[in-house]
Length: 320
Image (cartoon, rainbow, N blue to C red; front, side, top):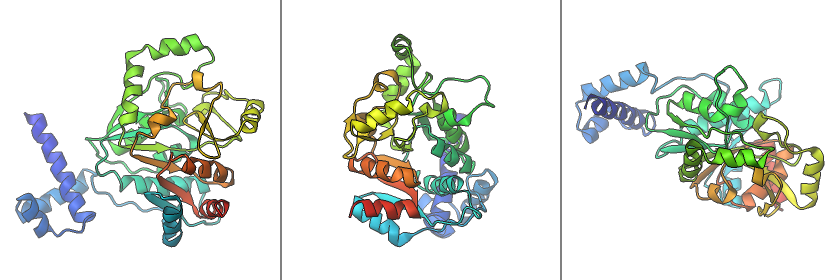
């Protein structure tokens, strides 16, 4: 009973804070809508600041490109698009800036998200590092790609991006405890027999929002564990029509999956199951990602995009 009361109170704190700071409602309007006294609303807002529900963060300016964002939304029928203005490297390290912009977007677009699926990548690691600590007790974060459990948590964060994001957002974490890729098919088959792995794979496609990166044909690093696809194999896949890879799966310029020897060696969400997730937020930028991004858009794998100005302009140019 006490636990239920505490949960309801936490939800009320979040609701009041959101109405005041995000929706612009006055304390009097909130008091009327929530059947509270104005003094109670004031106390809840103070509690929200004290407990970190409401935070003030000072960081690099998030210079957005609203007109360019509107063009991309209309051209590619995206549900949303965030484009950061290019700045010299002397001012901002580019990958960190993209992670910062993506983190701010994610933090303010979690309404209605009960389950967040995360496909670990180098780019998403910078998003995790840029998130402000939050309290999202009703949020479950789940790995969409298998990540081995670890006892030493001082290791490489790239292969534990989902857990890192969960820690920052203050949610509940559901791992997919296995290797992402296997050299031995028998070892993969045995891993798939684990109830925890089966549960994670079943849960993933039911996410409300998928947070994903994007791979080019220049490299495939297996989320940082080892390099399972050689440059020669990548060249062969490119010759067969592959333009990019996402969640370990390759696809061509039209977004159609290209069968590869990797498919039967990985543990993670399939492209078909990824398409079952209503919101697919992709964070990617750079000259090498323009062609892959165009292919991902054609395949419908992204409907919310976070990128930078130069990537956006090059992407528009490829569709002329």
